[in-house]
Image 1 (spheres, rainbow over the protein chains, first blue to last red):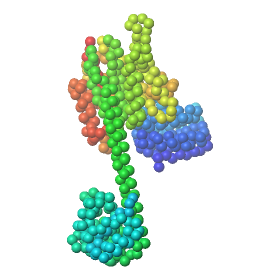
Image 2 (cartoon, helix red, strand yellow; image 1 turned 90 degrees about the vertical axis):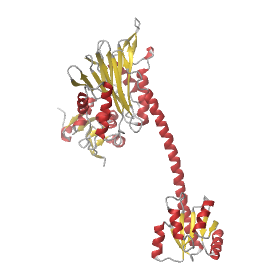
Image 3 (cartoon, rainbow over the protein chains, first blue to last red; image 1 turned 90 degrees about the horizontal axis):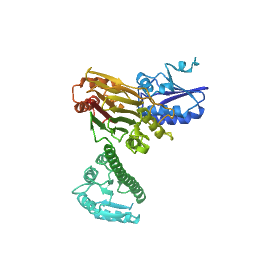
Image 4 (spheres, chains in turn brown, blue; image 1 turned 120 degrees about the vertical axis):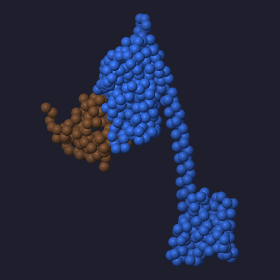
Amino acid sequence: MQFDIIEKGQYTVIQVREARFDAKLAPSFREELEKIQGNIRDHLVLDLGDVRFMDSSGLGAVMGAYKMLRNTKISIVNPQKPILDLLKLTRIDKLILSHPTIEDALAPTT
Amino acid sequence: MSKEILLVEDNKVMQLLMTKMLSSRGYRVISAFNGIDALAQLDKHPSIQLVLSDWMMPGLNGIELCYRLKSPEYGRYIFFVLLSGRDDKESIVEGINAGADDFVAKDTNINELDARLKAGLRNLELHNQLITKNIELDRAYATMKEDLESANLLIRRMLPSQTSFQGVELHYTHIPSAQIGGDMLGCMQLDEDHIAIYLFDVSGHGVTSALMSFAIQQSISSNSASNSNVKRKKETDPFYSLRDPSEVLARLNRSYINQDDNNLYFTMVYAVLNTKSGLLNYAFAGHPPMIWLQKQQQQCLFIQQESFVVGMFDFADFQTEQVQLNCGDRIFLYSDGITEAESSDNQQFSEQGLKQLVQDLADQPAAKQTDTIVETLKSWSGTAQFNDDISLLVFEWKGN
């Protein structure tokens, strides 16, 4: 099981169920995303809690998601430190906000 | 495939009878009197793959013949059918152990015999197709491997050949992963007082990344004054000015912004060193930090910038910053293949680890230092063949 997808009204959650988000996983992530693209309404939540390592292809897939869903809010949930560092290094943290839990991600922005 | 069969039978009458029967069903029958004779016949007729053999024969019997033909040393794939009056379990086990593919009792009627032999022929047909496909695959693989190797050579030729400049010594290591990869590095004299030093890493591996890295290297190094990514034309003497590192990255970003959705991009650090003053201007694009080894202070610092990658976002902007080097200072540029190399227990080498190593090896001359870093990395990851491209470039400012 690589991904769990939960579609709940206004928001969609993709849980990445792999320790490595790399060149092997990136193409199927893209495929999944393309499949559900039409159903995503206001908010896409990427749960990366299980991901221990993300390489350039994994990062490419996340940036690709941002480009594919230009008008959709995207949040990342529960990123481990190496992932957070990578998002920061490449300034993706400015485009996609990270939150410790799904509840935090879904809370109305203040 | 032709219905060729070798019939091995010591009883002359039986042999004649069966030959007639099989011929009437369209088989081309070659016959032999015993196992030894059978081996000779197979040598004489290299296309035969179907053997129908009696069990009890003088010289070499059916079981022994079967062992010979099914041994890995026998260079031909044979479908072996044992013919016997015996169909007790023990004999069949013996036959199976010898590698026989089927068993037919001597009194079996021709319809069943024909059906079983046809099944054997189908099996052979499949096997032969598989072998042919495998040979084709091997050939295709060999061609691809050759292509990759020559592509690798081409990439190698794009690496800098000049490593010694006025006031600057440069050393580098570039090891592509098993496949061809997307790492590239370079340096070039921009004018009398400036050299550009850079390193970039195209996402992913393989031919796509390599082709892109090839193109990027051209975009940077092609120095035709009219359309250079590193210099700007000017109307007054000296008729050019150097582009800021951030401007170089912005131009590359515009050129390589990805239109199709292949998510291909690259990270980069581009730096310009004033070889007279030691002033280093640089800009990052999502690339890991440089390491600054300060000779006098005997310490290592990271030089880093948070910045977008190149080729992904049309709105990306980049910044030029600068540091003042002192005589004998060294700067290390590298790709994440080094810091993300993993030991057998999944520990990454890490940026901190690299910085510490650079510090520990501070007394070594720069050339030796890069070699030692790569050697250390190899023993850390327990392999000589890395999963990702490894590139490392160090330059030392010798002062004016």
